[in-house]
Length: 311
Image (cartoon, rainbow, N blue to C red; front, side):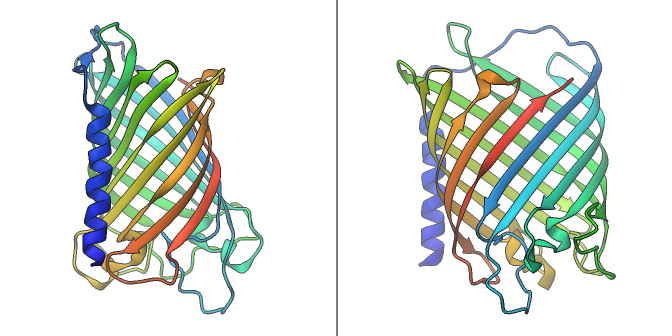
């Protein structure tokens, strides 16, 4: 029964995606081969979450463990060498800081308080799309990548250090994609879809030493409506995120890499005020675990999410 419900949710999410993409065929923008050069992108997700069901919750302190105040801020610096007008080769440096601002015992664990540095190279292909009038309607970004990562303890001395016996280095390689599409359906109203996906091999997963080799797939569709209200847009949506480790060792079955979360949300998009994207959001999420079960089955989350191209 559980698997039937999960399959129905996935099928429903992809049906909405299909409806959002239906209509006038997409037309790729005509573009000359861009000049090679640097790219610097700043991202961020600062949010409150009642629970933290997508990471380990095996503490034995007997407390409720409610309330996480997390900032995750990735910065990516790369040099793009264009092979043609849409394909580029790029060595890159990624730096991601994760910090939990809460003061309880469960806010101090290393998986909520760390820095991860990644050195890698990718081959990427990017498309933007326009309607028959030439107006932008979305884009598609795909990449093949390989990356060496290492993790350090939080810069906040009040947080727990990475324990002895935890793997702090990882080799990651795989494929990723980002897809976005919007379609006007009335004056000031649009139907939109966003999808992020990745399939990657990890030599470790920043867990116990000896727990090696992971093949993790993630697909995260989101679809909704957008209503213009002056210079902002109010966007109710539904989302799902399916994460699965395809290998069969005990450590490949942990709940934070084998789950489906889904539910409604709403965001206020403030893209007209900043380059890139910026939104304030709130979500109610349900979670189904694919292997090991946990005692949390739903969550609330609200915060701000942004993506800013600096170069």
